[in-house]
Figure 1 (cartoon, chains in turn purple, blue):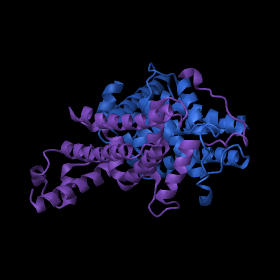
Figure 2 (cartoon, chains in turn brown, orange):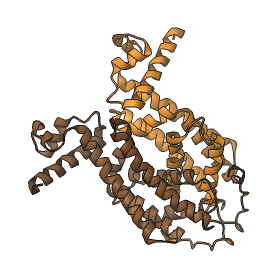
Figure 3 (cartoon, each protein chain N blue to C red):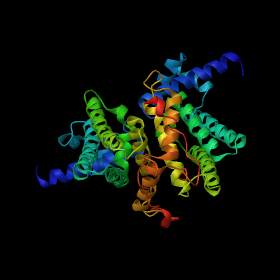
Length: 208
Length: 208
C-alpha cells in the first residue's frame, strides 16, 4: 500500500472512531466521516467498502491487541498473583489509552451484521477464556479462593473496563494509582482482614 | 388520566424500550415505535411530545427507583456490612429485572438533549453519592478497609451493573447465587485469607 493511502485509511478510521463514539454507529453518516477525514464522500469507498467495514476494523484491531497482550502476560509469568496484577494493569492501560475505541466495542456489538458479529464475539470469548485460565490456575494452586471462575472473570472485566468512562488523564489519580487501588480491591476486597474484623463464613461453598 | 390513555402510554413506552435497546436511540424511528404499540404514527404525539421525551421518561423512572431503593436500605439498616449486602442485592435485582431499561441508561446518555442530560446525570451522581456514604461510614467504623471511596463505588456499580448483560433467568445460576458470589468477591476479594496465603502489604496507604 502506498504511504498516502495508509495515512488516508488512518484518517478515515480516526474520524469513524470519533463519530461512532459521539453519536453511535447508526447516527454517524459516512459522509460526515469523509468530511472529517478530508476526503470526498464517494472516494471513501476506495478505502473501505462500507461503514460496517470501519466498525469491524475498529473492534477487531483493539480486541486482537487486548487478547495478544494477555496471552503474552500468561506466557511470561507463572505466579498467579503476578499474572493477575499484570492482567489488571494491562486491561486498564489499554482501556484508558483507547477510551473511545473500547466504548464502541462495549456499546455497538448489536450493530455488527452477518458473520461479523459471531467473529467479534469469538474474540471477546477468547479474552474471557484467557482470564478464566489465569483464575482457574490460581485457584488450583490455592493462591486464590475457590469461587465461580466465570463470574469472577466477568466482574474483573466489568470493573476494569469501566475505568475508561471516568478516568481523566490529568485528574486526581494517575493510571498507576488506579491500578494499585483496583489490585487491592480485587485481591483483598472491602472488609478489614480477620483479627481486626470477624471473619465471614464461606457462604458460597455450597454452590461449588 | 383515563385508564385507556395510561395503558396506551405504557404500550408506547414498552415499544420504545424494545427498539432503543435493540437498535439504539437514533436508529429507532418513532413510526416503528408507534407501529409496535399499535397506534398511528401521528397519534403518538398525543401521549409523548417527542422521542426524546420517551428516552427521558425511561431513564428517569428507573434511576429514581434505583435511588429510592438504596435510600430505603440506608435508612432501614445501620450495620455497614448488612447495608452493603442489601445494596449489592438491590442493584443486581433491579438490573436483572429491568435489563433493557438499564442497558439504555448505560449506553444512551449521549443521546440526551438540552437540560435532560444534566438532570439524568444528577440522578446518577445521587446514586453514587449514596453508595459512597455507605462505604465511607463503613471505613470510619473500621468494618471496611480504608481505600478510595469513589473508586470503590465505581468498581462495585460497574460489576453489579454488568450482571444485566450476561444473566439468563433460566441459566446456570439464580439471582440469589449470583448475589452470594458477588458479595464474597466484593467483601473478601480473590486471595485466600492470611494464614493460608501470605498477607499483602497495604500498598494504597500512601495514596490516601
